[in-house]
Image (tube, rainbow, N blue to C red; front, side):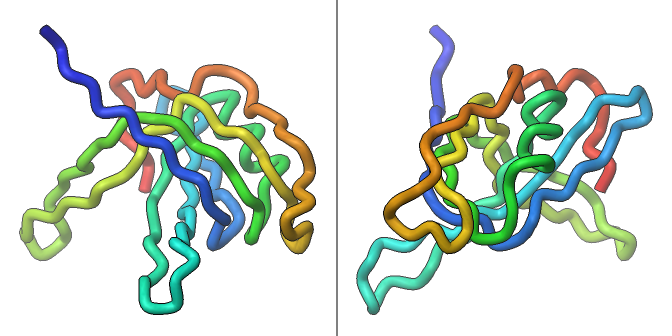
Length: 130
């Protein structure tokens, strides 16, 4: 039996999404989502989100720093060797669904839900170009 590790994140973007293309031309983007519990004694958690193809393009077009989003995806640990030969790793969410909940400065009013277009989980064999 296969396992499942579904992740749901709701929070605000810490920066505008970055959009790049793999060597085969697939669009890939990333952004960080700040998640606050609402308690003063809890620190903000920052979660890296990776989006692919049409979802990446829609996120880059419509999202900005401070935008509130709902993200569904799977947990992934990205592993690599740095320039000094050290093994490194970073946890991230590979998103398959992104809903645009609110615009920066909109407060609780939000801007309505607008899903990003396309499937964002088609990572293929291309390495992420960053």
